[in-house]
Length: 255
Image 1 (cartoon, helix red, strand yellow):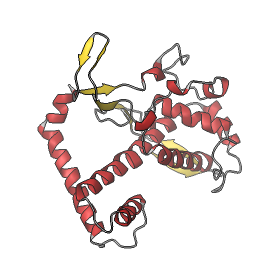
Image 2 (cartoon, one colour):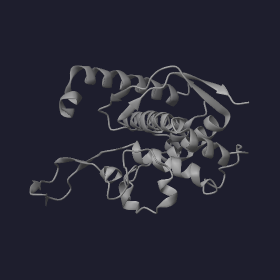
Image 3 (spheres, one colour):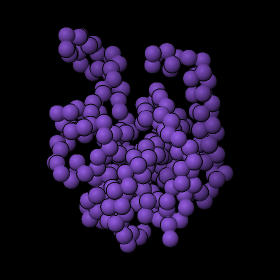
Image 4 (cartoon, one colour):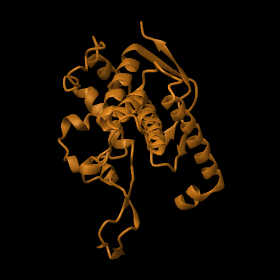
């Protein structure tokens, strides 16, 4: 099914459209037409120019822009979206969560979030239930056999590294959003595949773990969400967060 989607005319048209826009964006940045803009891509471009004596690979920069758009922004936003819905649905945990964040300010996480165990547990539970990269594409480098199947060099495989997130022998009630589990238990690192692992671990992991806590803390400590639509779960065939569910509502400042 997935292969058919990626080969469909609609998908290929969307792909051409998106990469066309990104190509124009990168060319403008290289030409200096948006000088003074301070964002993540400006840092990437500056370092690339510095490391390569002013020479750039246009296609490589377009790919970098795409990764920042998809992983650096899209996946983090979806993680927050899904996490917010579960946190707001549990009034007791929300109260404890906000109590722990009392006095939160812009410098609160300067040394990390270890001083906020319930907040940290909530982040880990969001990552477990809604992994940013639930499946990773890999290419066989050396022929091997697995479960009776022979895989040859160059063949494409999908590695479902987040499967342990939903094993009952690892996580009790795995389909329940239960942040307290991270305080009551100590889980093996191998049971957490949200960002992959080893030499292929997600390069954006630290970026996501900076953005998500700051946004979540600011939103939940300073605002109430008045939801104006019912949750709707959609299917997303991309490699990013598959549990896409939009919230329509208004954030109202807490008094």
